[in-house]
Length: 323
Image (cartoon, rainbow, N blue to C red; front, side):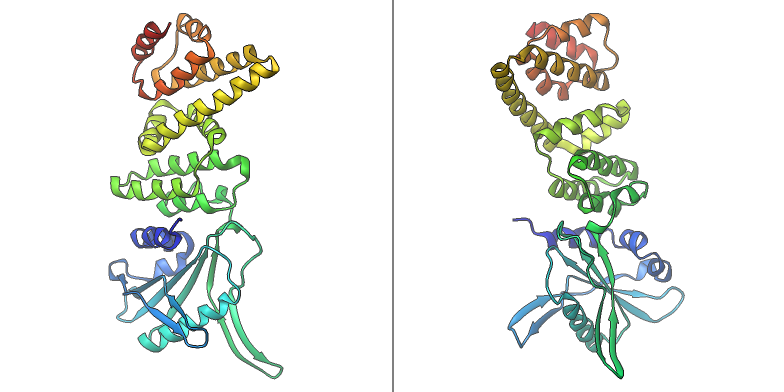
């Protein structure tokens, strides 16, 4: 089971100012960055139902150029819940009573479905009197297009694109875009790992998507490709190898059954000739010919080996051993 609240809290705690800059720019402009204080977990009990609730993230900040403070309450929801707006108001009321400070309430909805817009207020009104109009900021990820965030040099954008509105056929492309953006940020290894782990959790690719990811990655410049490969680490190596091997085994079996083995071998060779130059540089006509002459089994083995290649000589040595 994925601990969604833990993952989001870790991301937001590490990159809180970046989160504010991306989604709450007016708030980010008005607070003193060095004043941020993450308060202890707040626990509330609903005596009517016996339910126990915890506020996800509560941050105390000082207004820029002033001595007064305010609170930012960020709540994360990984599934839809009826009457959530009422719960947000209860949080607000109890936090305001305890701290006696202005509170800026925010909700992040991260579930994939449904995509119906969530309410952003809780109202109590009579025909002659509006008693309460409580509002809060809603960030509903499945309502956001990842394309609108791909140019933001922001680590939170790199992570949360993985939970935005993604068409099924775009998952591999979006994962590469997340990692490409992450490369440009030049964070320290721990923060890089936090974001790449977040992306891996929410954009775990199947074997078909892994092949698409590899094709997309093959279009990158070698230096950029290598940086992405360094971030992906073991998941790329293990997933790519497993996905290609299993997919090719199934495809080869289907090809034999349907009499298409020759066409499949040609397709595998073409794929390898697109990937190899990105790892080892341009191939001579002689090397291309040797790759095209490999059997489907050998091409499958080459797909597993190419991640370890650093130069053209590695490919030549491999071909000598397997020809």
